[in-house]
Image 1 (cartoon, rainbow, N blue to C red):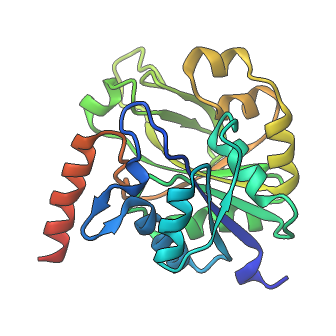
Image 2 (image 1 turned 180 degrees about the vertical axis):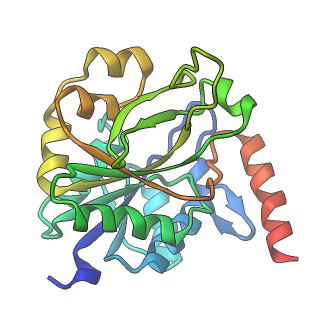
Length: 246
């Protein structure tokens, strides 16, 4: 398989959302949120792109803008489970889980995650982080932080501001971005694992992988994509889009 087709990008797009129902179909600059994600994934040119959904309305919307969607069970417990179901029966050795609520993610970020998997045989998973220097976001438990080893391997993810600066210094802190790359065998292993104590404590599924001994490597990127979790996030994204288009 050639290098440009060895990754399958799957965008899980569940219609139900506690804080913002049907957010993946919300309109942003004349397009749905999920279409923005699909376009970014296509622009990354790492391989085929499919949307994994549990609702016929999403499937129809994806077909309308020229994308491919596959139906997955409503019972999928997480985005990773939905991605694994969508990837079943395909041949790509690398699978990227791109959340369907990050409309402005850079294609270069997707490529960086794919390259981490291609170049590092020791990586079970790959993800992306960005430097965190905003005190307000450091204190926000909704912002997930990452601690990295010198070689980029993830040591831990937390909703707390890690690492703790005991002597008042300025440690390197990173904000985690919601994109995951898996080797196929690693994704299959991951979704078979039961939830772990740290995962339940922090409500972060990537901790399941770390607790099981899987290795996650992170690409450090410069820009944070806007995640659409609430109607207020959508309004903020609209304002950003207007500035970009001026």
